[in-house]
Structure formats: C-alpha cells, structure tokens
Picture (tube, helix red, strand yellow):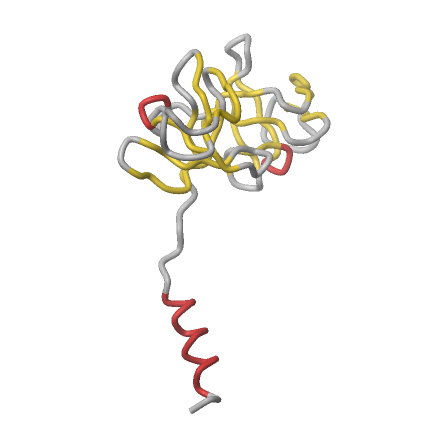
Length: 148
C-alpha cells in the first residue's frame, strides 16, 4: 500500500483543473493595493489607470492580483476593469514595436521597460498587436511583454 500512495497523490494533482490566467487592468485614476482583503489592511502600493494585473482569486468584493514583478496584493474589485480593455507592460529592457508581425518588419517605435501599451490581439508566432500612444497599431513580441 505504501507504494501506491505516491501514485494516488500524483493522480490527484493531475486531476485538479487548470487555472486560466485572467489578465485585467486597473480602471480607476488611483487604486490602492493591500496586503489583505480589507480597507484596514496595510497599504502596499498605489497604482493608476491601466495598470495590468493577473487576477489570482476573487473573494467578496476583493481580488487577489499578481503584477508583472510577481508581487501579490489585494485590490477592491470595482477598481479593476472587465477583460474588455487590457494593458500590457514592457518587461524587456526595451521592446521593439514593428509595423507588421515579422522580425524583419520596419521598426514603428521602441518602448522602455515599464511602459504600458494597450493590447489589441494575440497573433500566431508569438506576437501581439498593440495600440500605440499616437493611436496607430504596432506589433511586439510576446517575450518582451507581460499581460498576455
């Protein structure tokens, strides 16, 4: 029986449902991230409109979220937009934004680490279409961004 326990444990782990990543963006001029789901909890960070987060869990009117650094915190649920508008953040030292979803396409812009761009679509080949500040469209490699 002792030999079956590891097999049963592994079977139970693989039977767990896969958790889908739920990327969203802050939809308030100012939002506070807390260390617990309460207005009385310790305030950790202040973030602004568009700040991208990954929703880990929802409890009552609170969301536990992860940011691009991997930090976990709680935010009031009404401060986070539905998935309709999503922002991405540059995680590379510099992201090359191309005029087409091809490595050899002309460079449309460059964005420094920490810059947020509005996500439009995820494309084959590891690309995302993004909206640039001048309202034109560009294409960036997914490995340079967080939030997709």
